[in-house]
Image: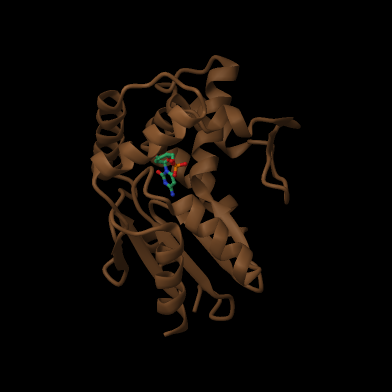
Length: 221
Ligand code: DC
């Protein structure tokens, strides 16, 4: 059970490009639960810094921005920042990298803590991120840690980007993914790691449906 011992939480953690978002959104839809895309909050903080010309080194200013983000998660899936739909803007590789930089600032993590906790509502929450099982929801009903090699994750991302008509190199993507893993795993505040009681699922050889079925099986158990 969750913190309040009444609201169930499924925590889905893991590195970038492992399929957390797809699996979490699917779980939330099937269970009819709330969905926390915690990565989006870090992506929005990074974007707000760029838009306002604030350097990632100005810790106080970045923290203030994170505290005061005016965000609306639309039920349709869009995300409004200061009333403007920024969904496409925050999903780029650069936005992911910027998110990883601001996410390494402990004060920014603190600033976003309460906002993430507020997603915990009945009938339940699927929480997607890096520290859902370790920091945000340590009493989650189920903790899952998804893994896949950097090469496998880069190949998936490559396929998506090529299908969208982007001109990218697989080797560059592998390098970027490894760099982001490195930063997310080695920061001092809530680093990316599996909780001791998390179920680790290697998704390298699995389809989305197979991962979904496995998580549901674990939850029912
Ligand atoms: O899941 P994502 O790719 O949207 O996350 C973007 C970055 O945000 C990720 O590289 C690290 C950071 N992040 C984090 O530190 N903690 C979370 N719970 C979620 C994301």
